[in-house]
Length: 395
Ligand code: SF4
Image (tube, rainbow, N blue to C red; front, side, top):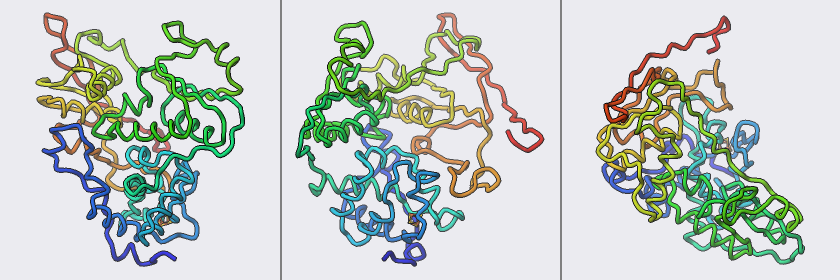
């Protein structure tokens, strides 16, 4: 049984981060290593804050964990120091918990019973999840699980992002002969080229790919299904050569407004035009053509992708970074009228990248881009945004 008073004894503490000056100067993971003995011991204390609720809202697919992670079970194992058992229960519902531990926004924490009020704060579920995964790898509890029987069926998975890889791993372990097709030169989809290195070091992705290869999953890169370039594979051939096909492709269509005056000036880039070569540089593919070094950078968009550009520009050596959010700043605490517990709260958040310098402007939009006589963007003219509410008070 859980410690029913654990949350009264211990304050919530997230993963400790590396000092700002240190992490701004490199591309390594911004958090301190989770397998560090002191950090690991702190995670045990955090797991002890869990009450093992009669109805664990954290675990529910409705508002809590979309994967149905068995959160109270592995919290209790960690509290007892049973890391191997915690690793097994975590992987019962989640193929790649270090991916989600690093990158999921944690709706489980928003749905935690300890999140009903602003204090004492929810269980640090994300920290516990990520720590179990890393300790599991470090202690040798995560190993390849090749199937004991083969079905003789061939399955194609199109796309090697997290969804495609998870599907491929499950199907391989079920005994099927699985091949993952990826159009890019490396595996991982947006995990590889969209997520900055400082948020998720790609050797962690490679570590999982090695596990999958050892289990028997096959991978083909440089292969666009339905394309007509070199190495492309027709849909007809894909269907003819496999018993089943899983489509796990993403949507790379950007939201671009070419009607804004000056949009065609040099120096204005879409997020993926900027993040992909920055990640390629970290992979050793040479300098990005779009470095922010020595430049003033304006990021349009206040979401996670904007924050990824922010942290990337900071590490590339930008002189200054400003992020524009068209919405006014959200409230500091959950407003029940707008986002009651257990829903995802509409509250003010500061991603780690935005702690590292620069400035965020709310209720601000681009009116037009101003160029110099070489056709390069020189300034951005801004306007304030007023969000009107309807008669019911909705925005
Ligand atoms: S809702 Fe929070 S306190 Fe309850 S079981 Fe889940 S993590 Fe533990």
